Image 1 (tube, rainbow, N blue to C red):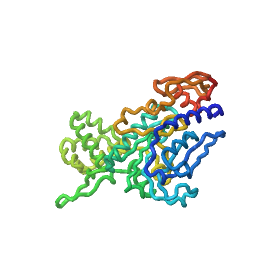
Image 2 (tube, one colour):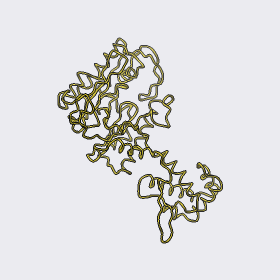
Image 3 (tube, rainbow, N blue to C red):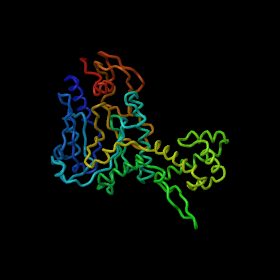
Image 4 (cartoon, rainbow, N blue to C red):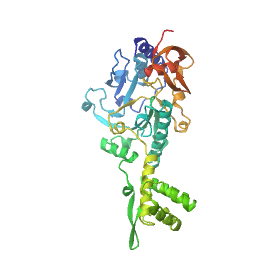
Length: 391
């Protein structure tokens, strides 16, 4: 990044912070604070181990600090400490940490970061976010009011949970949460139990909650669909599933036709091994489509720094933006995360990396000096695709 570009971005970031709406976390005085400044070198310098007192002591002081320093990125700790300004982590006096989830397009298994457009990555990440929120509310019992959703400003989303009962969870406990959300090593045997009925026993899905309930819902839905098909279509549908050949498909279809109530009750032995194999196939389908590929280190690290909502992401110029739950479906980061400070004016840039540009309408940016809308120019410069040109 050239000095002219760095000076421009730092100045405009400072202008933004002079009137920015910042969302400080609860008990900000117990948090560690950090930032990455604009520096002359190409490397990244992290300034951390700062306390709120180092920044002035209150919310207004944070704004003044950000306006004055205009960093590329600004962070606070998910953890709360007795003395957050100490340089040694062991000396800070850890007192608990928020439970934080991070979704990033780089970690989405269905996304090729080299081939997908920025808009496609953001859309896929929002779909994963919705799956995560469904899991947290349906399976863990959290309410919308307990889940703070934030667009990261880059390629994903953060979810913060700040409930007092969770603060003291250690890394191992948080890893168990991650494993559940990602359905790590989950198979059919994890979802069934042995139930006694009179003098006999049978294997049934755990339908009261969790992944057992999810698989059971899919099983019931799948069976109802089969019952509405003729035999040829039903056989074809069954044989499309992994591990189900003609013989097992025939057995399953017989159970569906003759004993649907047992299947609805979660009996995985109705119809013999065929239904068990169907449950295995549907378990694989459910875990593939309903899990959320969260970034494990962010959730398990009880001393993690996370982006401060309301600040700017130095790699895009977008706002790290909190999103009300009732606005999530309509939220478009390429429009709604653009800072008002960067609207309504144009700037000259020298584009060094031409190509597709997903800001608003699908378009392509050409190389060389040109006038663009300022938020587009900020994005290009922050991404390293352009340098500031003389006006």
